[in-house]
Length: 233
Length: 162
Image (tube, rainbow over all chains, first blue to last red; front, side):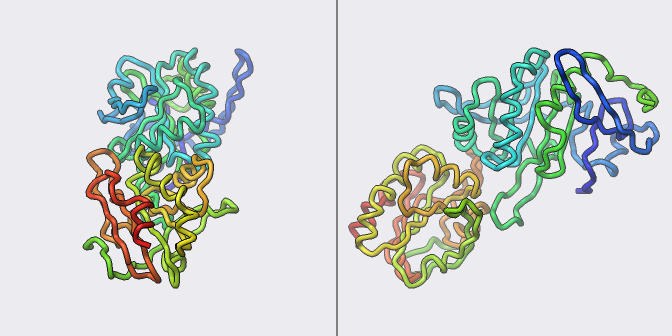
């Protein structure tokens, strides 16, 4: 996969402007953008060589897939992507592995912390996906005291992860991680990807709850325009 | 690979685990087992019911008794990554001298011929449930279960053989 620094794709805005950390204090938000050399307005597919290659892109409909989890009664349940996303605003975020340091100490806890805030902004479902089995996800959920606000879903065979092209093959790594998911966070509306922040491997730069919270605000303010980069002049 | 059996020499392989200082280590099976009596036991998956509630505890409970009969190492292998194995180990109040070793890519499990395809259940390739008593790298007892059930692969069966 061509590895470049992560770039964020806003549907219709064809520049690789980097959205810096947005500081939110009560109801005032400040944005700072650093524009890299502006590339001509183009459709997303032609950006693939400049961006990290992923099958899924902003504007795509998520492929159907079945994920599994143990419910509060300890029963194994399944949830399809349509269950999770149809007619809803959903945040799906993925981690390379349950119990791994960054995932456990920052990524997942961040979403647990911000879950209420995200829900207040209209997000109906928040789900974490990992290529781990449902037993491990259940144990991880209990270990981090994750309540019902964030679902921990097992993509046990990696089928969904591969279908969206976000897999990372760590089979060569001697510690034995096999094929896992790259870290990402996406905001999905009625099954369509609106925001996709896909990290290089397991890096943790733009896929946090705070980043997602910022996007929900951005969408609210309809900065989500289809004109070119000159909007940010 | 045909399943390992009594009389065979165990293959060497590298497994990962977090040591007492919480650092990730790669260990060679032979380095742990050469010149000693050891038990190698395998489970289909960390945090799964039978494994967690019966199989592993049987070895933790009997570890002193096994030690008094000359078993120096209790090596638990599962096809899970070392982070998961570490978390699983922590979920027990004490693990005595059972080492929780990760065979993340199932390489060693396959070398033993004890792999189990659980892809249908979303678990991928795992290990069959088994317990081996190994004396200076030679398999003396091989108790391998058919599926995930727990009938012959516990600590008691190993104790009767000693």
